[in-house]
Image (tube, rainbow, N blue to C red; front, side, top):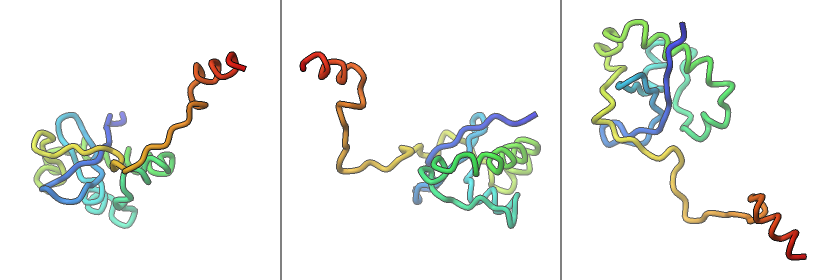
Length: 118
């Protein structure tokens, strides 16, 4: 049976944002855990936007990593691969930007209003 997991951006030890794999109330650094458990097939840390952008390519490796961590969580904790979620800082999945671009045409009701106005 496959382990259920979530992913997100986290600040571990007040460091740079990293992709984390969440298993119930614990989280693993994807780059660190995959380097230890998957070796040469390591997922690295592409960053959350890149990972989500190529989700189909990353999903099998993430699932394998979640399954391995779930199979022996005691060992994963001893190796420092799984840590409690509570003290880890949850970050926005995408870094805030200075500008947001929107188009009214993206909203059906707005398009309908424009059509009726003509």
